[in-house]
Length: 69
Image 1 (cartoon, rainbow, N blue to C red):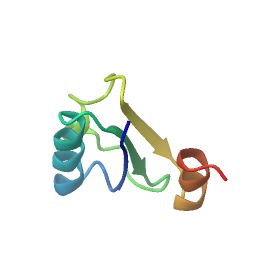
Image 2: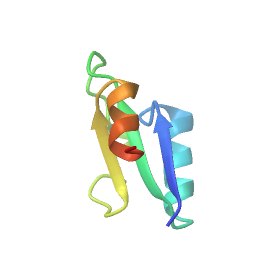
Image 3: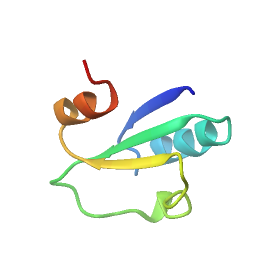
Image 4: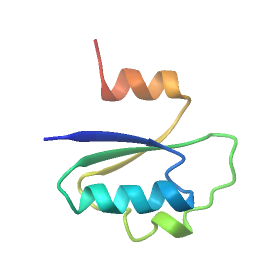
């Protein structure tokens, strides 16, 4: 299965890209900054889908989770 990592998944471009890739069979991991306001309106319809994963972390932690050595 193909995997995608989208930084800024709650933004306009990130949310569109997440939906686009999910519809094409990708496993999508999206990042949300811990310091950002919890604004999920653009991704509310994606949450709960089996191949959509949110990570509240800095990029170093996400890379270790998605692509372990």
